Length: 252
Ligand SMILES: NC(=O)c1ccc[n+]([C@@H]2O[C@H](COP(=O)([O-])OP(=O)(O)OC[C@H]3O[C@@H](n4cnc5c(N)ncnc54)[C@H](OP(=O)(O)O)[C@@H]3O)[C@@H](O)[C@H]2O)c1
Image 1 (cartoon, rainbow, N blue to C red):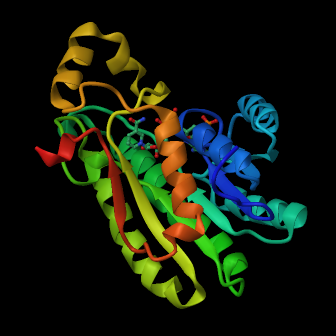
Image 2: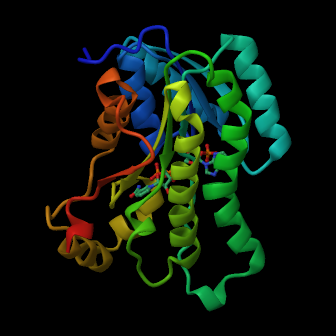
Image 3: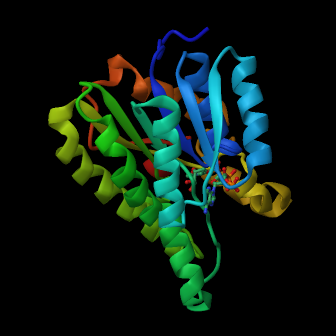
């Protein structure tokens, strides 16, 4: 049982088929929210729906590629038809292509920027109008500690996540009078599929762990609980900012 109660709230989560999106769906679902699970992979989304139901929550599956404006418009239409309103929007879908800047093709650059940043613009443009007029709302954008610091090979990723913080601040100001808060969560390394290459390479894994003061990878549940807190009434005075959850990486 969660100490927070999101009964009656509808939450849209992109990238909900695995990793952090799944963990946030489970945390919010267990607290009573109804979850609209969105991503491209319907099979995996269906497994997440079953997992949310297993913790006592409700969820529905919606297929959408966040790179496609038309698909986001259809997502908006389908979700509004199903739920007649949205209270929480979690823009979590994201990708990371790790290579030197000079090796990026323009297509690869656009793919990272469009998945991690432009999709958030499109999702907010579609769903924010449905969140207004309710006196409560939460937008959470999944940024990264790579918005603040970086590593070789992360030019597109860091650029996309740093820009997402700018979007977060501006939208928070636009929505403040509606009682809708807009914040970013910036995780450090969390053990998800996105990091399989790092987790499976003993040398790289060792290098990463040596840079994390807490000497471990983050757990997806820890990000799930942080998102739940941001959705709670207790977090109602937090807006336009970023919460780092990085094991101390950026404190160095
Ligand atoms: N894990 C970390 O260490 C870490 C650290 C900092 C920030 N983050 C951020 O947290 C978010 C989630 O990361 P994760 O580690 O959970 O990654 P993940 O396990 O690779 O999951 C990524 C999710 O994004 C979805 N996605 C990707 N491209 C999409 C598209 N074009 N349309 C719709 N959905 C798309 C995927 O769904 P489908 O494949 O089913 O479409 C999947 O559900 C990302 O924004 C990432 O940048 C992660």
